[in-house]
Image 1 (cartoon, rainbow, N blue to C red):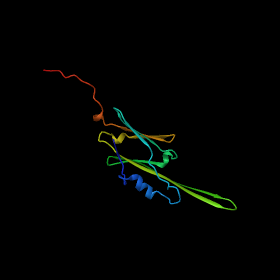
Image 2: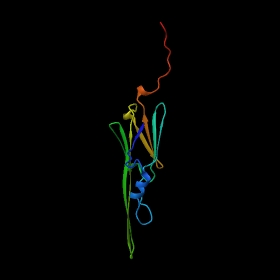
Image 3: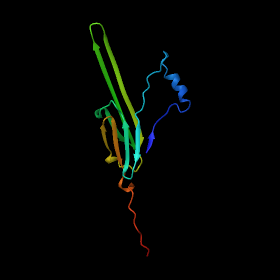
Length: 141
């Protein structure tokens, strides 16, 4: 399975990141990062695990379109605290989007997913014709 990802800054990434992610007040701007993903393959199919703490299963969207598996989420939270002397309002926006090119051997109709304790698990079973065939003997005539 190939990971479809884009890197806008393929060469000199640290120099360009430093130029554009500096907040010019002694620190660096907050960077959004992609969730970590583990992909494994066995005889029956592929197994994908993505670590996405802080999200609920209702927040996550999984779709397959033209042999591309896309996992995304966007959550916006608003917290407001009022007292007699001040009002504090904070906005938090969390989002990610990951896309993976599916091989032709994946049975797209049987993909299953689950989410537990911050870990998204997706099972990508192989098509029947892609499964390993048992060894057989051929007799000579």
